[in-house]
Image 1 (cartoon, rainbow, N blue to C red):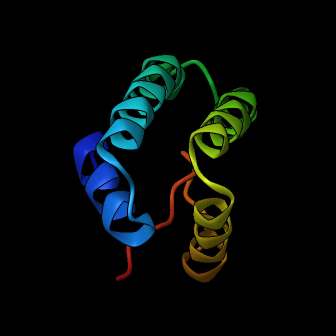
Image 2: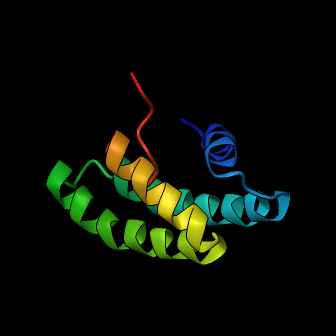
Length: 95
């Protein structure tokens, strides 16, 4: 799922404002810029990639939470629990 699709889902699920969407897009673009080189590094094992990605994902979650209201944070937490977490910190799409 690309950033725009991810934001569209989050906007619907969490009733995000346009300002929140703009802020989140910048956060996710920064995360992608940091994660892409790690996931494209063929010298790293899958586990090494996961370990190197972990602090970036945790930082992104904190930045996302800072943009959301307490109610939206609670809703996102429930969605994460319900759908499971993907490596980038957003709810996994239903399959």
